[in-house]
Length: 182
Image (cartoon, rainbow, N blue to C red; front, top):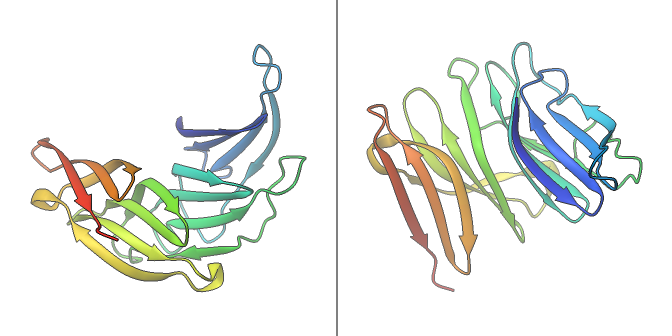
């Protein structure tokens, strides 16, 4: 499955369910004939580690994924190579869940030095805000519990407003608007 797509120039980045290639890069300079450039297997998984969301800013890919056991659910990758190959070692990562509770980042969005992540585990869903001044040391900045502990599935940002789409265990959908005053 392709869970998210971001296109920068002639390169398409795809977040996929392939647990040995969560990110696929493709040359789309000829839209009628895309060409596979490379796949990227995120480190730290012992089982499924599916790519669920991504955001590409400049030459950096921010990958959100499902993690069924130990490993990071949020991974920062170097996409500066013109060949589309992403180096094996990430620039940084953040393990949000625990080894005992599977966790998924269904939406990721980066603005300046803050990463906004939505997702959840079996027991709760939140909007997580991560401080990323230093990719080697990504830290929690804040979190917002979503209505009725719903899982966040999608997000967008416009100005100082973050929009989060979520769904609870009873399949009730929510749109939350979170505002920050500068």
